[in-house]
Amino acid sequence: MDEAELFQQLEDIYGRRAHGRYGLEDVSQLQHALQAAALAEADGAPPALVLAALLHDVGHMIHKLGDNPAADGVDDRHEILGAKWLAKRLPPAVSEPVRLHVEAKRYLCAVEPDYFAKLAPDSVLSLKLQGGPMEAAEAASFRAQAYAEDAIALRRYDELAKDPRAATPDTAHFLRHLPAARIGSGERAAFARDGFVVLRDFFTADETKRLGGFSRAFGAGAAAILASGAPPHEAARIDGSLIVVPEADDPAKVCRFEYLIGADAGFRAMIAARVAPVISALAGEAFVPFKDKENEKHPGGGAFRPHQDFAAYQAFGPRYNITAMLSIDPATHANGCVAFAPGWTEAVRADPDLAESRVDGRALLRFHKGGDLNGDIAEDVAARFAWTPVETAPADLVLFDSFVPHRSEPNRTAQSRRAMFLTFNAAREGDWYARYYADKRAHFDDPKFHISTPTRHD
Image 1 (tube, rainbow, N blue to C red):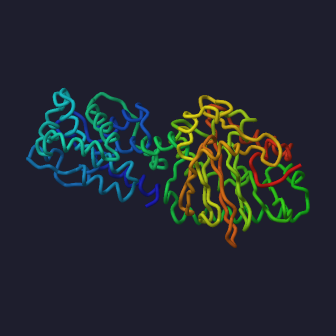
Image 2: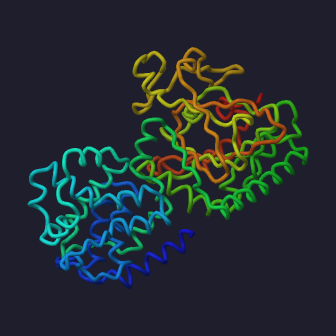
Image 3: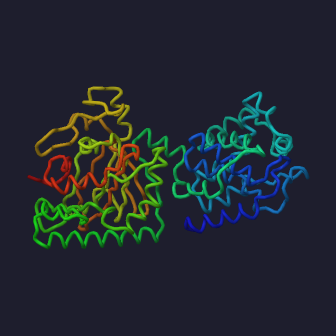
């Protein structure tokens, strides 16, 4: 089910079936859901948890047991019913807090002495049917579950969302988080810790097909630019065209090309709808395009030595960037998939001399300046990290920031391996995309545009 279809389905459920009374409270199911989502959003919760807050009682709306089955001595198991329904449509970061939010009530009643006293009468009644406060062993088992913290937060929003006078946005306001539903507390924590996160099966089959089509069209355009015979630095000066970099050992072969978002309105719209919201959700603020490229990685070449992207970006305004990697072809060990250095920040904390400076608290590692290794992390520094190769399929989305060290090996297969790298910066730091490419078109061979690249330039 695509997002447009799911959006319509949820709009229908909450528009037609959520007007019944919420238990014994003076609010409807719809008011309760909207208030819970508004509380989560105001709390700065990630998109998945905002959606979980909105949808946590969807099980009440898809069964036929009435508005308050607990009054009839029936535990409707709405959390299980709702979670199963959601799990078919949304990631675990949404469905699992919903599944656990009743257990979270039982947990809180067990570990917080004053929590039970805060429960509304209908919640006290349902608690008895749900098993009462947890025993110590059960509470420990609950707390060990992956989404327990999110479920506890959801439970607190749930208890507060019962004000008949509260004003909230409508359902559509919260359903706008659907494109970023893969981003929950776990993804944010992993990204903050490691500087990268891999979202498996992010794109649908139709979307991967579309991306492949865009890549082929861009590639044909790039090949035509090289075939024209115009020197790359002169061809780059044509406004609105792709900027093409040839292979160092074969000037007739495309190494990479840039200005994808600027060159095609359809591609720009797809990235704005599918990728940008996820990056903004991960960062906790709006992010906008900064630069982009597709690397062709032909057989025998394409290796990138260990580097941090910020070494190349520091000549520009933004102090922090996030890049989305789209694997047009499968990326494997054999064809030189990207390898990251998780845990690198712990290594720097243990040995501060690995860094040559700090940028808003983030470490810029010691790196080569000038020469064939321009921009590469110093060898003694790179040797301190454990490198983790990340194999990806075309349906996967990899997000990484501009400080995480990364590298890749040469392509040892007989086929080229294409990957797009779309880099964003915080909107509060300005719109740099046009400025970046105006500068690059005017100064194609400036070394600041060729840091840590497997190509040579004057």
